[in-house]
Image 1 (cartoon, rainbow, N blue to C red):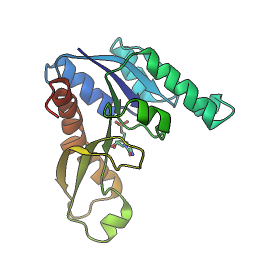
Image 2: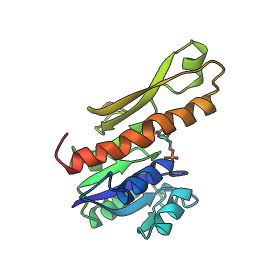
Image 3: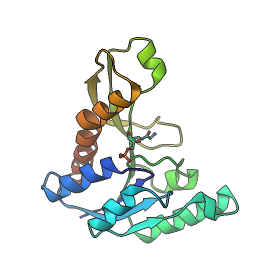
Length: 184
Ligand code: GAR
């Protein structure tokens, strides 16, 4: 069993895609041990609880310094003895000590190229990327990517939704399944 923790900050549609993939057997040999959010109001926490999964919040705002948060965050994560940490729309930078300790065990979903600037310049294709997390910003080794067409008249919101539907919700569960089976 791949003990997996999912980190979230918002709505949690990627989390939902993972939970659905576990339910339908697209992800196997994987246990979602905990969902952790920095944001107490994240709907993702609700999704986890509805699914009977432990949902916890740890917010930097509860701590007097970033260092204190980083230490407490790492301690909390350590408690769950995770084999894999999935950043599914987690908007907090992972502390360096955690990146080091969990090297090769943290993955992130990144909505590549979604921004107004890209749309203005007439970008035709965008997509999403699942990659390992290293010390940089979206710089770790790439596991999976999927391209999505930009359509005429797209707004950033419409495009972001299409990228989630056609790419993120597919490749993030797939990457977990591949990791659980030693295929990465
Ligand atoms: C997703 O689009 C994800 O790719 C993005 O946040 C959204 C979370 O949506 N992540 C990042 O931007 C990380 N840099 P969700 O909460 O509905 O899964």
